[in-house]
Length: 210
Image 1 (cartoon, rainbow, N blue to C red):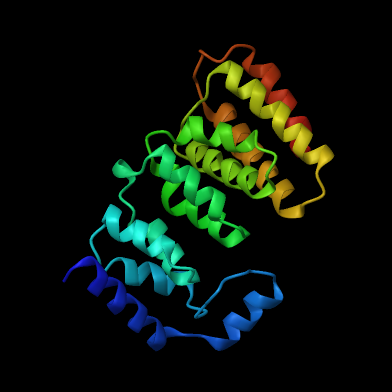
Image 2 (cartoon, rainbow, N blue to C red):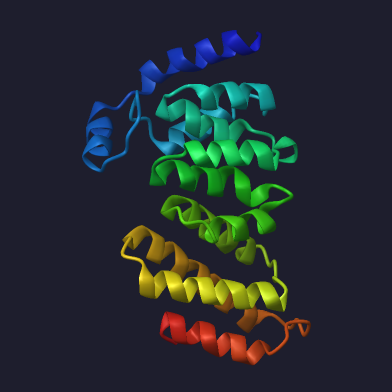
């Protein structure tokens, strides 16, 4: 089966799993899609397991202005073939919270350039891009990645600005979650390469109320 036939098959399968109630709920929450079948993320995950990861298929799915196609694209893109240039295009076209979270959790946390890219995103003026960056960093901290001292200082400053200066609740939550994961990482780490580690822990603790 070639790429076009695979996409047609995927689209046909959406009809079997469509959920009108979920679609209406998404519209009320402001999730803007040209077309949405209201299929749950768990069902989309199961569907993605039926196909081999393929960069061309993923790119073609992303181009479809259909919620389920875009989310599947984040699941079917091979992490080792994802390029920063493609990431730039996808993140610029991800215009709602659900899509940036799909990008962060399904794909970008696993790419080779995840750390550098996340810092690029959190320094953006775009709320959704910042949310994506904070989510990627949270996942990297869970995996045990310890940034260099300079990056930690930069991140703490950015989290502080976000918490104190932004009104978007979802952005503040993402920043606080990231701070919590970094705090847990530094508290539990025996790494001695972080300069002024105890001071950094205190600064993060003050941000998260510890």
